Structure formats: C-alpha cells, structure tokens
Image (tube, rainbow, N blue to C red; front, side, top):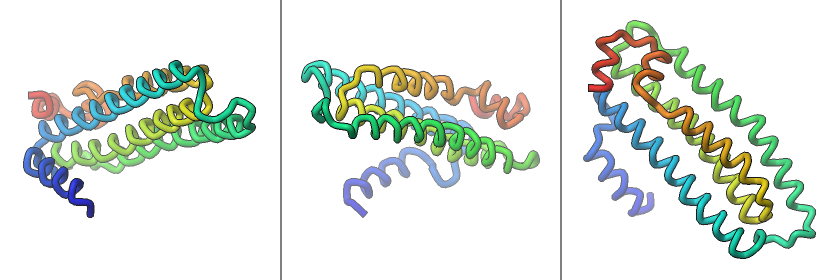
Length: 176
C-alpha cells in the first residue's frame, strides 16, 4: 500500500471510530464523505470549465469522430449506472432487520450511501473529463443535473429516519 494512503488511513482511523462507530459518529462520517464528494466534483468541474473556456474548446480537435462516441458511451453510462446506484442502495437497506441496533443500521446505511454517492460522483467526473476532451459546453447540462441529483441525495436525519424506519429515540441518537 502507498505510504501516503497508510498515513491517511491512520489519521482517519484515529480521528473517527470507523470499525465500531456510534450512530452519531456514523452520521458525521456520512456527511463528511458527502461534503468531500460534492466539493471534489465542484472544484474539479470548475477548473475544467475554466480551462475549456480559456482554451476556447477541448483538448481534442473538433473534427474527430471520437467525441460522438464519448457522448454516446456517457449517455449509456448514465442510463445504466443511476438506476443501478438507486436499486443497489435500496437493496442494501432492505436487508436491514427491524431488530438491529441503530448503530448497525447506520453502518449499513453509511456503506450503502457511500457506494451510491460514489457512482454519482464517478458520472460527474466522467462527464467533466469528456467536457475537457471534447469542449462541448452543452455537456454542462448533464453535469449540473448530476450535481443537483447528488445534492438532493444529501444524507439528513429526516431522510435517514424515513429510509431506516427509525424510532424517535433512534433519530435523537443520530442528531444529538
């Protein structure tokens, strides 16, 4: 493993209890991951948009037929991966038993959400890379929609309590 990754994992493991977190810690981790995903996508997209505007186009020449192929592949990825992320998340949540503790429910929810948000982030980054290569400013439309979809899926106490069917006491243990 890369030494930088080892240091990063050591810091994360010692600042956040990843292996056996409380419900509140799990919620905090979930919001930290969401914020990192969102800021990463927005910053990377901003740099790419600035580059495309400054260079008056993408890195590939406009006469190349590859731009159509890239756009088609991206459209297929959206059609396949967004429903897959949604159903994978639903499937993981449906495996949660009603008698489990709120901590175990939150761990399953956290892991499932990270996968779902990671798929959406992957689509955002793929769109941004295609925008950088092709330079078609109309690719900002799916990018903005994907970022909006990521924001809509922000993990909040109300949303988590609805998806996990938490009791009012369990909901308090997450937010307090």
